[in-house]
Image 1 (tube, rainbow, N blue to C red):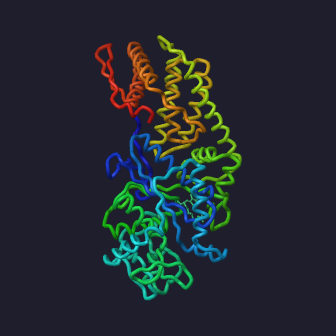
Image 2 (cartoon, rainbow, N blue to C red; image 1 turned 180 degrees about the vertical axis):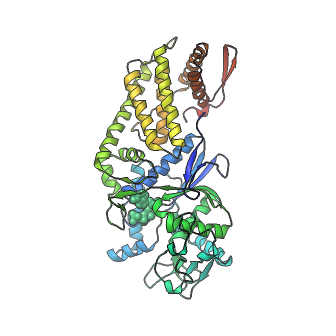
Image 3 (cartoon, rainbow, N blue to C red; image 1 turned 60 degrees about the horizontal axis):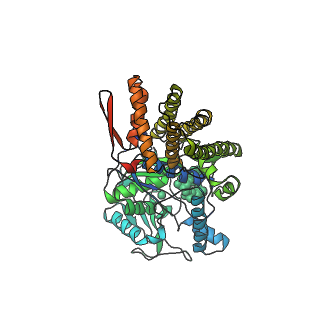
Length: 481
Ligand SMILES: Nc1ncnc2c1ncn2[C@@H]1O[C@H](COP(=O)(O)OP(=O)(O)OP(=O)(O)O)[C@@H](O)[C@H]1O
Ligand SMILES: [Zn+2]
């Protein structure tokens, strides 16, 4: 049996079991980029972490819908356009393209990328609902603000429980009821891009877009909301206040999951601080898969610093992993089918299965990728040290299957191992069943149980009657998950 899946929830500050709102389906929304400058390795950390987390959820049998927004209208974009004397749409186009290329080079796949400018009508509707429910007010200039005093749980997500800690954008203080109220709709100043609204010409504030687009694509309650820790306050605090107030769904989100910052000295890497390393530069030198692997070497919640030395280590480890993959492909063609597994074979089999289990144990407990990477390194050592010179069918095939499962989650190999063909699967199952029988005869029950779990993952159900075992395979599609 695989360990129970748990993840740290920023809201409750505890580890929580994943319990989807709709059984079997997990809905995840992650805050994406404001596209006014190059995508940097700090952003990449957040993108890769959620991608790998999604793949892990997939490997545990969940379907996942992964939505990440693109902020294509914002003060930062307007200011950049003004500074460079360019059209704001051109800025958006340039950096959206770069962002999508960065995702591609990092092997990150997102199901849907909604853009703010394509959801203005829904945003206006959402704001209207907030006004009707008494949570927002319109000012004479034509802006709309959220009235923070109307949401009693404000501050709990970020742990900022006193009003003095609720600083928002400093602009337009004079027209707000309270300094901590935040803009839902901003009246356009001369020369700024605008959309028509019931309150006059203007554009959405930053926070409202995520409430609207996540709800539109994932429903009024969903499972995971992510982004970097830099977004906990005010962005996520505000999103939560708006959504729970407008929708009345409490909790709006089950788990708030945040990725720690990639730092440069004491500062976060950030476009605004101008200390960025663009992903495209790192990819050019090291390759996207190496950068992806590098991210996985640190725990997603901890801050991390970027260094060429640590990339060198990532590159070396990944090289070995790619070598293991090619070696197993080659050994798969030559592996010898034993009539009986020797004690030595069983020892190797046990250590292989242990790496498989520890990989899952690590990822199940708050998505601990560095420990999972350690299991992967142990796996690599076993293949080179023990299987390379003893390519027994059961060992090669078990290793092959495990590596395939590892990479379905990590997505780092240049050439992922191919699936086993059906005839191979059947003979592999027969051998596992025979070996398990032999182990039970010898009263080696723990290894026999490990094999039972492996067989379970292949869709095989065993039934032991005395010394005899019969089996049926029920779910062929589970094979290479
Ligand atoms: N240094 C970083 N480390 C980890 N994640 C980050 C970092 N900077 C931003 N992110 C995350 O990347 C995603 C996109 O960030 P976004 O484009 O909003 O950053 P920004 O605040 O506009 O720009 P910047 O912070 O670079 O000035 C968000 O989920 C954000 O939390
Ligand atoms: Zn957001």
